[in-house]
Length: 409
Image (tube, rainbow, N blue to C red; front, side, top):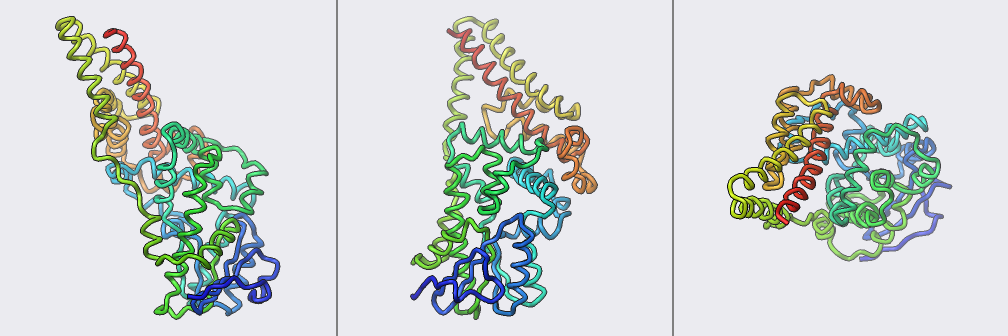
């Protein structure tokens, strides 16, 4: 294997002055073109590079889902929200919606669609019959791996940040825009959700540098016939990608497997078991020490504390009466089994009884920009149902648990 990073004099015509790196490896020359995701100049540079005829392959910093979102604004309307809830992907759906809301705020503020240069690269490559490769890791995997690097408190802040990003309609600060011009859209988005937590950097930037470099090597193997590859990526990825592209020795498949792996959840749900043991033990202790009256009183207080607060959360979200009832029933059982999570149960009932229409999905991006729109739009209201019911239940669990502890002590 031979790999070198060549000087700027080898840059293809038309890209002078643009941030870039060139790496030659195994007979393939990779031109890494760094872009600002909110710059019209970057769009022009990308289109000029693709039109130059100097490249036989184009790679872009996108995964299939993000490309679809850029090229088909109505793609979200094809989702089955009930299935999303059933599969336990409600939080992931909310994160993608928050990302879309952040990008929309940028587009309205700056007059250019974030990622427009990536969209242009993909479109122009297809128009000219060039090989096109999507080299970024699927955003859901990035979100999961980022979450796994956080402690429980930072995870809670991330969830709260996502919820806040769905409601916030203020302009993006100028310093954040300047960072974005030199950085990465996902980094800026995750920073928006999590308050710039440095623990996210490894999953959101460093891992993706290595992942995209591996995908580039994979896409330019001997069978592809690629010799001149243009890779359009955010400027913040140039240094890391060039380093990995020139120096990594591991096979691309091995790198991908490593960076796509998500730690499986523990087969033993220790937290659920501990809470269940506390509850059941507390009830049993109450019956044993105080008789039927004390034991029954503990159960009633627990049901009322969790059930009422969970139902109130659902009611605030504008839930259907049956959704509110399901929240009341599921909330006391939530700590005993994750499949009985009150937010998931009530959101599922809400989405089933008030199934979102095609028009709801089409109007979603506009409706989430106003407080009233959240309650008017059925998709947004299901998300509110999920979050507010879960929040009410969580408060109820702490309240009920402390009351029980006080009674037992």
